[in-house]
Amino acid sequence: MTVRKNQASLTADEKRRFTDALVQLKRSGRYDDFVTTHNAFILGDTDDGERTGHRSPSFLPWHRRFLIEFEQALQSVDSSVALPYWNWSTDRSTRASLWAPDFLGGTGRSRDGQVMDGPFAASAGNWPINVRVDSRTYLRRSLAGSARDLPTRAEVESVLAMATYDMAPWNSASDGFRNHLEGWRGVNLHNRVHVWVGGQMATGVSPNDPVFWLHHAYMDKLWADWQRLHPGSGYLPVAGTPDVVDLNETMKPWGDVRPADLLDHTAHYTFDTV
Ligand code: CU1
Ligand code: CU1
Image (cartoon, rainbow, N blue to C red; front, side):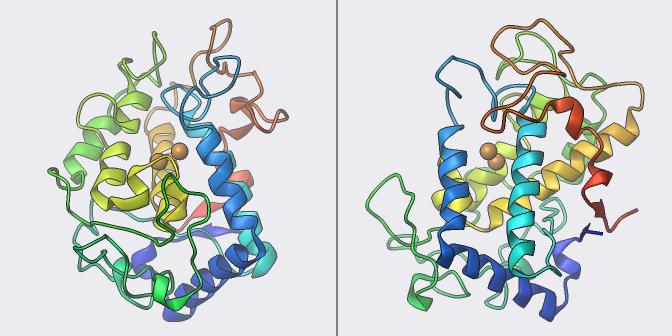
């Protein structure tokens, strides 16, 4: 059974196995397939105008499925690996162990944002940026370079307290849990973390930075936490809503999975907190 752990409690061996598996997926080309898929679903999202991955109710189930596939790819390399999650409301400093050279490496240098240490530094030769928005082929970060700090626990709790999953107009203007979590309104949790990390994380090709997976594993955990806090609330919309994915409609690009299929994460993994 896959147990997703807080990254702060991983052993040195678990960190090494995780980063080794990432590098192996990168070498095989499979890692970049995930970046390409995400990039294709960052905007419109699809040619028929349906919003799937972002700015819509299916933000959470879409990324849940995306992470499950990625975790399975990692496990095909090393069956002991699970996705760790990054609780950025607690590990909120640029000196957190997350950014140490034995794990994800640190911030980029001031000149060009290039990450200079850890397994994903350009100098280590294992992490070319192939799916990119410009000509720069190296991983970039500017930790804490944005105007706002990482979200606080109180801000997380204010979003978890929202009892309605999502509501019309089902986009980046909506009130409700999903949109405040995604960050287009209110305190802004998810988007703000992407911007705080900077570099590729602040672009549509954000999965180029391995911290993407740890950030989204935590977003996914917050969805599970919200479900436990609001047992009477569920995924919305249930049916008949144009341009977004209803509870029982399939999601692209998979075509065989509905939000309804993804409401119970325990079929796939558990968290170290339960
Ligand atoms: Cu995304
Ligand atoms: Cu994201």
